[in-house]
Image (cartoon, rainbow, N blue to C red):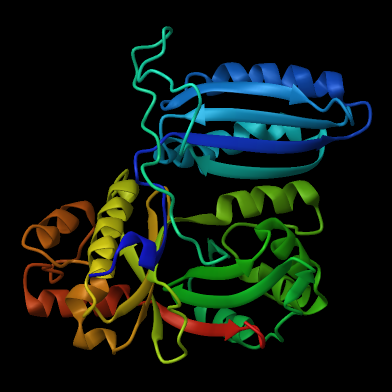
Length: 374
């Protein structure tokens, strides 16, 4: 039996309270404009479901450095808000005041003194503490997704497959380890694994001339226009393209070159994306507990109703369709079926239906590259 201490794990679904830390470096002379924008934003965020409190702090050493901390009942309501169009619109006034930002998210594991389950101001539960520390592998996982114009898929795939890999080392502490790129119809998903600071790695990659050339080459085929030379346009694009990793579980040391990497796209019904991701996370936890499971690791990426699950599996997926799809158990196929926008022959309660659905949601792998020293 695989125990928690023997596997790598991260999850947004453990029910624990969330502490979000936003570090900001303000532009010179922008303090008053920033305070006005923050007051407006703070009042609107206070009404977001799951929000508990926030604090605004200014550095005693460098007045240009500010800190916003917020507490949430759990990660899902925060992720639903921060990845929404409403959030993009809310924070727009801050961009003209800020030179640089960095966002960090933490589950609350311990606190002193222990806080009551309810606040005096609200009858809403504050959420629970993270029960046990999770074991990491020193890697940060993130994905970006966007769509291209129908009919351009083959051309875009050729462009994305043909680029030269950028330098992997971003700085002395940050390295790009792996980039996996998939397509499902006209949707592109680029998943990255980074050792060190994700933001540093992404900025490093974006500056590389070979990457800039590829991004410019696919611009005419994008459904949503962007101008990566314009900071505001680039910021909005990457905010909307973000596809966060909401759950990760793997056997410790599971990075063998012998496993096959697949990305599966789950067509969630409107407002069902989080429920689909949560169900898949539970399935992957069960698979990680089974030493006979061919799945070495799985990462669930989710934003709104876009759900993508990347698995590393020792056998061809068609040989283990139930485990590959995450539909093991008596009730799981029916429950997942109610959450997904299925076609007429996608019956998840039959072997033929599962095989057909697996073939439909298994994304086309465009490229999967590791850095030479990862």
